[in-house]
Image 1 (cartoon, rainbow, N blue to C red):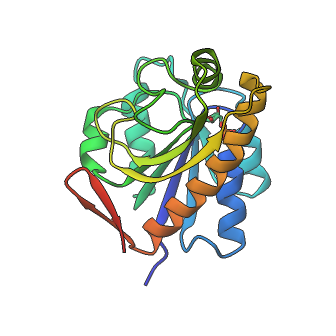
Image 2: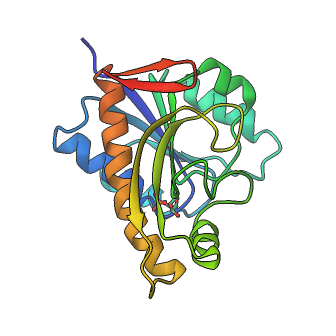
Length: 203
Ligand code: GRF
């Protein structure tokens, strides 16, 4: 049985990518990362890929043909799974349709709270602090045509401390993101995720 082929899409530092790379190397994920695609030139995630000799490419998100080039690039490796690891661009609807329940995203809040258009990165944690929420967390979910609206795979809460700033909260949530993205990808690669309607059953 060939190992599931994984493509990882990134935009930033790539700490979630690093968690996946380490998990594959450590045998926690029974798949193989075939390619890393960044939508931003100079994303540190690309250096992480290069260090582990994972083929990578940057497709500038500002390019008029960004969506077409992204689809073309993915077609070259025929992935079984696409992982959005801190990826900030919108995916073309045709890609989401083609990869129904085969695109996993990690979001730094407990969906459906603090998510949707404009809620990404530090903005999420600032909103949590500003509204005085006592609990936040992270969510791994399948991607559908909405923004952070796909079937939820895994969630884990993170307590918001009285002395927290957006930065200190972000750091604790990011640690949980790394755990969840690894677990979600591992479950997918082991064929243990079953989507029933909008719910995900873990087998
Ligand atoms: C982080 O803000 C994380 O919450 C979100 O993407 C951002 C960068 O993650 N998922 P990474 O270090 O590039 O994986």
